[in-house]
Image (cartoon, rainbow, N blue to C red):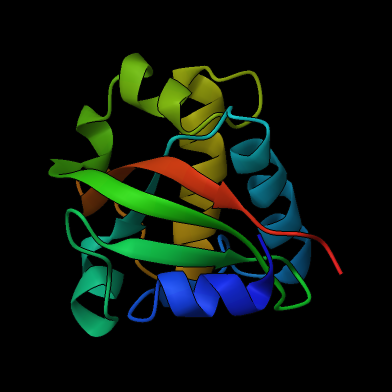
Amino acid sequence: MSQQEVLERYPGAQRWAFGDGPQLADELLQLVLAGEKTATCSSYVAYQQEKVPQIGDYSVILDGRGEARCVIRTRALLLIRFCDVSAELAAKEGEGDKSLACWREGHQAFFTREGTFAPDMWLVFEEFERVAVLEEK
């Protein structure tokens, strides 16, 4: 699917990249493209400040250069505390060895950089499905 086709087929889709920098955006995108990553999360603070997709919404996922690479659709949202994330939920993010320990380490570092980390912080956990892959330029 070309970028033009995406714009026509998903006109209201938000455009965003995973993570907080180009390298992380590319790493997490590759997990989505490989079918390993079917979930993501954000701090509730970020969720309130940004326009985050709602259930049924489409999102165009960007790579580290800001180029559209795939389209996902939000299937479920869950409000959960960081300390209550289960191994099953952590594995859906597809990162590292997919263990809860790896998830906690990586996400604690991310939310610390964001300035929101606390062991009992609220997260918005999003499950999604990949619905289209775009041609790479």
